[in-house]
Image (spheres, rainbow, N blue to C red):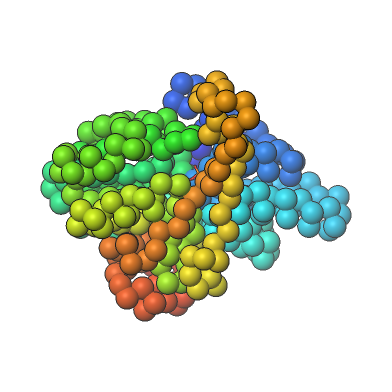
Length: 339
Ligand code: MRU
Protein backbone atom coordinates (compact mmCIF):
# COMPACT_ATOMS: atom_id res chain seq x y z
CA UNK A 1 0.00 0.00 0.00
CA UNK A 2 1.42 3.36 -1.03
CA UNK A 3 1.69 6.13 1.65
CA UNK A 4 -0.69 8.28 -0.40
CA UNK A 5 -3.38 5.56 -0.23
CA UNK A 6 -3.39 5.29 3.54
CA UNK A 7 -5.17 8.63 3.92
CA UNK A 8 -6.08 10.81 0.94
CA UNK A 9 -8.10 13.82 -0.08
CA UNK A 10 -11.08 12.57 -2.07
CA UNK A 11 -12.89 15.69 -3.29
CA UNK A 12 -15.83 15.87 -0.92
CA UNK A 13 -14.43 13.49 1.72
CA UNK A 14 -11.23 12.17 3.26
CA UNK A 15 -10.55 8.58 2.27
CA UNK A 16 -8.70 6.17 4.55
CA UNK A 17 -7.90 2.50 4.82
CA UNK A 18 -9.55 0.93 7.87
CA UNK A 19 -6.50 -0.37 9.74
CA UNK A 20 -8.61 -2.46 12.10
CA UNK A 21 -9.28 -4.96 9.31
CA UNK A 22 -5.70 -5.37 8.18
CA UNK A 23 -3.98 -7.60 7.17
CA UNK A 24 -7.00 -9.69 6.21
CA UNK A 25 -8.98 -7.08 4.31
CA UNK A 26 -8.11 -3.81 2.59
CA UNK A 27 -11.23 -1.69 2.91
CA UNK A 28 -11.38 2.01 2.12
CA UNK A 29 -13.81 4.27 3.96
CA UNK A 30 -14.70 7.93 3.55
CA UNK A 31 -15.24 10.47 6.32
CA UNK A 32 -16.96 13.85 5.92
CA UNK A 33 -18.23 15.04 9.28
CA UNK A 34 -16.47 15.88 12.55
CA UNK A 35 -18.23 12.90 14.08
CA UNK A 36 -16.86 10.55 11.40
CA UNK A 37 -13.33 11.94 11.71
CA UNK A 38 -13.41 11.62 15.47
CA UNK A 39 -14.72 8.06 15.28
CA UNK A 40 -12.10 6.97 12.75
CA UNK A 41 -9.34 8.27 15.04
CA UNK A 42 -10.79 7.00 18.32
CA UNK A 43 -11.53 3.50 17.05
CA UNK A 44 -7.99 3.29 15.58
CA UNK A 45 -9.27 2.83 12.04
CA UNK A 46 -6.69 5.59 11.44
CA UNK A 47 -3.81 5.46 13.92
CA UNK A 48 -0.11 6.11 14.50
CA UNK A 49 0.92 9.60 15.61
CA UNK A 50 2.05 11.12 12.28
CA UNK A 51 -0.76 9.40 10.36
CA UNK A 52 -3.47 10.89 12.57
CA UNK A 53 -1.71 14.23 12.08
CA UNK A 54 -2.03 13.96 8.30
CA UNK A 55 -5.62 12.73 8.63
CA UNK A 56 -6.48 15.56 11.04
CA UNK A 57 -5.00 18.08 8.59
CA UNK A 58 -7.20 16.87 5.72
CA UNK A 59 -10.17 16.71 8.13
CA UNK A 60 -9.81 20.39 9.04
CA UNK A 61 -9.48 21.33 5.35
CA UNK A 62 -12.74 19.53 4.58
CA UNK A 63 -14.57 20.87 7.65
CA UNK A 64 -13.51 24.39 6.59
CA UNK A 65 -15.18 23.89 3.22
CA UNK A 66 -18.36 22.41 4.71
CA UNK A 67 -18.77 24.72 7.74
CA UNK A 68 -22.05 26.62 7.89
CA UNK A 69 -20.68 29.20 10.36
CA UNK A 70 -17.60 29.96 12.49
CA UNK A 71 -19.06 28.60 15.72
CA UNK A 72 -19.84 25.23 14.16
CA UNK A 73 -16.40 25.09 12.54
CA UNK A 74 -14.72 25.79 15.90
CA UNK A 75 -16.72 22.99 17.56
CA UNK A 76 -15.91 20.57 14.75
CA UNK A 77 -12.21 21.37 14.86
CA UNK A 78 -12.08 20.93 18.62
CA UNK A 79 -13.70 17.54 18.26
CA UNK A 80 -11.04 16.35 15.81
CA UNK A 81 -8.14 18.00 17.67
CA UNK A 82 -8.96 16.26 20.95
CA UNK A 83 -9.93 12.86 19.51
CA UNK A 84 -6.76 11.31 20.98
CA UNK A 85 -4.80 13.11 23.66
CA UNK A 86 -1.30 11.60 23.72
CA UNK A 87 0.05 11.97 20.16
CA UNK A 88 1.51 15.46 19.68
CA UNK A 89 1.13 15.33 15.89
CA UNK A 90 -2.67 15.60 15.81
CA UNK A 91 -2.99 18.97 17.56
CA UNK A 92 0.18 20.20 15.79
CA UNK A 93 -1.24 19.45 12.32
CA UNK A 94 -4.72 20.79 13.12
CA UNK A 95 -3.25 24.07 14.40
CA UNK A 96 -1.00 24.40 11.38
CA UNK A 97 -3.92 24.05 8.97
CA UNK A 98 -6.03 26.47 11.03
CA UNK A 99 -3.33 29.14 10.71
CA UNK A 100 -2.91 28.69 6.95
CA UNK A 101 -4.50 30.92 4.33
CA UNK A 102 -5.31 27.90 2.16
CA UNK A 103 -6.35 24.93 4.35
CA UNK A 104 -6.25 22.25 1.67
CA UNK A 105 -2.89 23.36 0.32
CA UNK A 106 -1.49 23.23 3.87
CA UNK A 107 -2.93 19.75 4.50
CA UNK A 108 -1.38 18.50 1.26
CA UNK A 109 1.94 20.11 2.26
CA UNK A 110 1.84 18.34 5.65
CA UNK A 111 1.36 15.01 3.88
CA UNK A 112 4.08 15.70 1.28
CA UNK A 113 6.46 16.79 4.02
CA UNK A 114 5.74 13.68 6.10
CA UNK A 115 6.80 11.50 3.19
CA UNK A 116 10.04 13.49 2.73
CA UNK A 117 10.68 13.62 6.50
CA UNK A 118 10.29 9.84 6.80
CA UNK A 119 12.79 9.35 3.97
CA UNK A 120 15.24 11.56 5.87
CA UNK A 121 14.63 9.66 9.13
CA UNK A 122 15.35 6.38 7.32
CA UNK A 123 18.56 7.73 5.82
CA UNK A 124 19.72 9.32 9.08
CA UNK A 125 19.06 6.19 11.13
CA UNK A 126 21.02 3.92 8.84
CA UNK A 127 24.26 4.35 10.76
CA UNK A 128 22.66 2.97 13.94
CA UNK A 129 21.91 -0.43 12.38
CA UNK A 130 25.01 -2.62 12.05
CA UNK A 131 25.21 -5.14 9.21
CA UNK A 132 23.26 -8.30 10.12
CA UNK A 133 21.89 -6.67 13.28
CA UNK A 134 19.29 -8.43 15.40
CA UNK A 135 16.68 -5.77 16.09
CA UNK A 136 13.66 -5.69 18.41
CA UNK A 137 10.74 -3.35 17.71
CA UNK A 138 7.33 -2.60 19.19
CA UNK A 139 3.92 -1.45 17.92
CA UNK A 140 3.57 -0.32 14.28
CA UNK A 141 5.80 2.42 12.92
CA UNK A 142 5.74 1.92 9.17
CA UNK A 143 3.73 3.60 6.38
CA UNK A 144 0.41 2.79 8.04
CA UNK A 145 1.48 4.73 11.14
CA UNK A 146 2.77 7.82 9.32
CA UNK A 147 1.20 7.98 5.83
CA UNK A 148 4.83 8.21 4.71
CA UNK A 149 7.67 5.67 4.77
CA UNK A 150 7.55 5.18 8.54
CA UNK A 151 9.81 6.01 11.48
CA UNK A 152 11.38 2.99 13.22
CA UNK A 153 10.22 0.70 10.41
CA UNK A 154 11.53 3.31 7.96
CA UNK A 155 15.00 3.01 9.49
CA UNK A 156 14.85 -0.80 9.38
CA UNK A 157 13.67 -0.81 5.75
CA UNK A 158 16.42 1.66 4.82
CA UNK A 159 18.94 -0.74 6.40
CA UNK A 160 17.44 -3.63 4.43
CA UNK A 161 17.68 -1.64 1.18
CA UNK A 162 21.30 -0.78 2.01
CA UNK A 163 22.05 -4.52 2.10
CA UNK A 164 22.46 -4.73 5.89
CA UNK A 165 19.95 -7.58 6.15
CA UNK A 166 18.68 -6.92 9.69
CA UNK A 167 16.68 -9.63 11.45
CA UNK A 168 13.75 -8.11 13.30
CA UNK A 169 11.86 -9.47 16.30
CA UNK A 170 8.38 -7.96 16.15
CA UNK A 171 6.41 -7.58 19.37
CA UNK A 172 2.77 -8.50 18.82
CA UNK A 173 1.80 -5.41 20.90
CA UNK A 174 -1.12 -6.34 23.09
CA UNK A 175 -3.90 -5.42 23.45
CA UNK A 176 -4.65 -4.32 19.87
CA UNK A 177 -1.89 -6.19 18.06
CA UNK A 178 -0.50 -3.37 15.93
CA UNK A 179 2.73 -5.40 15.84
CA UNK A 180 1.41 -8.72 14.59
CA UNK A 181 -1.25 -7.26 12.29
CA UNK A 182 0.54 -4.24 10.85
CA UNK A 183 4.26 -4.11 11.65
CA UNK A 184 4.89 -7.70 10.62
CA UNK A 185 3.00 -7.06 7.38
CA UNK A 186 4.98 -3.95 6.50
CA UNK A 187 8.36 -5.45 7.39
CA UNK A 188 7.78 -8.69 5.52
CA UNK A 189 6.38 -6.79 2.50
CA UNK A 190 9.68 -4.88 2.44
CA UNK A 191 11.61 -8.16 2.38
CA UNK A 192 12.86 -7.85 5.96
CA UNK A 193 13.55 -11.08 7.87
CA UNK A 194 10.85 -10.64 10.53
CA UNK A 195 10.01 -12.91 13.48
CA UNK A 196 6.83 -12.40 15.46
CA UNK A 197 6.80 -12.89 19.22
CA UNK A 198 4.60 -12.22 22.26
CA UNK A 199 5.46 -9.01 24.10
CA UNK A 200 6.38 -11.08 27.15
CA UNK A 201 9.08 -12.92 25.13
CA UNK A 202 11.18 -9.74 24.89
CA UNK A 203 13.44 -10.47 27.88
CA UNK A 204 14.41 -13.96 26.76
CA UNK A 205 14.78 -12.79 23.16
CA UNK A 206 17.28 -10.15 24.28
CA UNK A 207 19.11 -12.68 26.43
CA UNK A 208 19.12 -15.71 24.11
CA UNK A 209 18.60 -14.43 20.58
CA UNK A 210 21.37 -11.87 20.76
CA UNK A 211 19.33 -8.73 20.18
CA UNK A 212 21.73 -5.87 19.35
CA UNK A 213 19.34 -2.94 19.66
CA UNK A 214 15.75 -1.84 20.17
CA UNK A 215 14.18 0.80 17.94
CA UNK A 216 10.68 2.25 18.36
CA UNK A 217 8.60 5.25 17.34
CA UNK A 218 7.01 7.88 19.59
CA UNK A 219 3.73 9.67 20.20
CA UNK A 220 5.01 12.66 22.18
CA UNK A 221 8.51 13.62 23.28
CA UNK A 222 9.01 16.19 26.05
CA UNK A 223 11.77 18.83 25.92
CA UNK A 224 14.01 16.72 28.17
CA UNK A 225 13.61 13.59 25.98
CA UNK A 226 11.06 11.68 28.10
CA UNK A 227 9.06 9.77 25.47
CA UNK A 228 5.47 8.54 25.34
CA UNK A 229 5.01 5.55 23.06
CA UNK A 230 2.84 2.44 22.86
CA UNK A 231 2.32 0.68 26.17
CA UNK A 232 5.20 -1.70 26.78
CA UNK A 233 7.95 0.58 25.47
CA UNK A 234 9.07 1.62 28.97
CA UNK A 235 9.45 -2.03 29.97
CA UNK A 236 11.54 -2.67 26.84
CA UNK A 237 13.75 0.31 27.70
CA UNK A 238 14.42 -1.12 31.16
CA UNK A 239 15.21 -4.53 29.62
CA UNK A 240 17.54 -2.93 27.09
CA UNK A 241 19.38 -0.99 29.80
CA UNK A 242 19.67 -4.12 31.97
CA UNK A 243 21.26 -6.03 29.08
CA UNK A 244 23.47 -3.14 27.98
CA UNK A 245 21.95 -2.66 24.52
CA UNK A 246 20.75 0.68 23.11
CA UNK A 247 17.13 1.72 22.67
CA UNK A 248 16.61 4.26 19.91
CA UNK A 249 13.52 6.38 19.22
CA UNK A 250 12.76 7.45 15.63
CA UNK A 251 10.36 10.39 15.29
CA UNK A 252 9.75 13.56 13.28
CA UNK A 253 10.07 17.07 14.73
CA UNK A 254 6.26 17.27 14.92
CA UNK A 255 6.25 14.59 17.65
CA UNK A 256 8.46 16.73 19.92
CA UNK A 257 6.45 18.91 22.29
CA UNK A 258 8.95 21.51 23.47
CA UNK A 259 6.28 23.15 25.63
CA UNK A 260 6.31 20.14 27.94
CA UNK A 261 9.41 20.05 30.14
CA UNK A 262 9.24 16.38 31.09
CA UNK A 263 7.18 13.23 30.68
CA UNK A 264 5.07 13.78 33.80
CA UNK A 265 3.08 16.38 31.85
CA UNK A 266 2.26 14.07 28.92
CA UNK A 267 -1.44 13.08 28.94
CA UNK A 268 -1.84 9.31 28.79
CA UNK A 269 -4.90 7.97 27.01
CA UNK A 270 -6.78 5.22 28.83
CA UNK A 271 -8.89 3.04 26.60
CA UNK A 272 -11.92 0.76 26.99
CA UNK A 273 -11.75 -2.25 29.29
CA UNK A 274 -12.88 -4.71 26.63
CA UNK A 275 -9.61 -4.25 24.72
CA UNK A 276 -7.91 -6.11 27.58
CA UNK A 277 -10.70 -8.32 28.94
CA UNK A 278 -11.24 -9.89 25.52
CA UNK A 279 -9.21 -11.11 22.59
CA UNK A 280 -10.21 -10.77 18.94
CA UNK A 281 -13.77 -9.79 19.91
CA UNK A 282 -14.15 -12.78 22.25
CA UNK A 283 -14.62 -12.23 25.98
CA UNK A 284 -11.82 -13.91 27.94
CA UNK A 285 -11.75 -12.43 31.46
CA UNK A 286 -14.53 -13.01 34.03
CA UNK A 287 -17.49 -10.69 33.46
CA UNK A 288 -16.72 -8.58 36.54
CA UNK A 289 -12.98 -8.16 35.84
CA UNK A 290 -11.70 -4.64 36.53
CA UNK A 291 -9.22 -3.41 33.96
CA UNK A 292 -6.37 -0.88 33.72
CA UNK A 293 -5.75 -0.07 30.04
CA UNK A 294 -3.30 2.78 29.41
CA UNK A 295 -2.56 3.01 25.69
CA UNK A 296 0.91 4.50 26.21
CA UNK A 297 3.71 4.71 28.74
CA UNK A 298 6.53 7.19 29.22
CA UNK A 299 10.16 6.11 28.88
CA UNK A 300 12.52 8.33 30.90
CA UNK A 301 15.12 10.05 28.72
CA UNK A 302 18.09 8.43 30.45
CA UNK A 303 17.00 5.05 29.01
CA UNK A 304 17.10 6.38 25.42
CA UNK A 305 20.45 6.13 23.61
CA UNK A 306 19.50 8.51 20.77
CA UNK A 307 16.64 10.00 18.76
CA UNK A 308 16.57 9.67 14.98
CA UNK A 309 14.91 12.70 13.39
CA UNK A 310 14.79 14.31 9.96
CA UNK A 311 17.35 16.78 11.34
CA UNK A 312 19.83 14.05 12.23
CA UNK A 313 20.63 11.94 15.28
CA UNK A 314 20.12 13.62 18.65
CA UNK A 315 22.21 12.34 21.55
CA UNK A 316 22.39 13.29 25.24
CA UNK A 317 22.43 15.76 26.81
CA UNK A 318 18.94 16.12 25.36
CA UNK A 319 18.31 19.53 26.92
CA UNK A 320 20.80 20.81 24.35
CA UNK A 321 20.25 18.52 21.35
CA UNK A 322 16.43 18.57 21.52
CA UNK A 323 16.54 22.28 22.32
CA UNK A 324 18.20 22.84 18.92
CA UNK A 325 14.98 21.65 17.24
CA UNK A 326 13.32 24.91 18.25
CA UNK A 327 15.44 26.67 15.63
CA UNK A 328 15.44 23.93 12.98
CA UNK A 329 13.94 24.88 9.62
CA UNK A 330 10.80 22.96 8.71
CA UNK A 331 12.50 21.17 5.83
CA UNK A 332 16.23 20.66 6.36
CA UNK A 333 16.70 18.94 3.02
CA UNK A 334 16.21 19.76 -0.64
CA UNK A 335 12.51 19.23 -1.12
CA UNK A 336 9.96 21.21 -3.03
CA UNK A 337 6.40 20.82 -1.84
CA UNK A 338 4.15 20.53 -4.90
CA UNK A 339 1.42 23.19 -4.97
O1 MRU B 1 -2.40 3.53 19.53
P1 MRU B 1 -1.59 3.66 18.26
O2 MRU B 1 -1.64 2.44 17.42
O3 MRU B 1 -1.94 4.92 17.49
O4 MRU B 1 -0.11 3.84 18.78
C1 MRU B 1 0.92 4.05 17.86
C2 MRU B 1 2.27 4.09 18.48
O5 MRU B 1 2.43 4.06 19.67
C3 MRU B 1 3.43 4.24 17.56
O6 MRU B 1 4.56 3.63 18.08
C4 MRU B 1 3.71 5.74 17.41
O7 MRU B 1 2.56 6.42 17.04
C5 MRU B 1 4.79 5.99 16.46
S1 MRU B 1 4.21 5.84 14.81
C6 MRU B 1 5.37 6.22 13.72
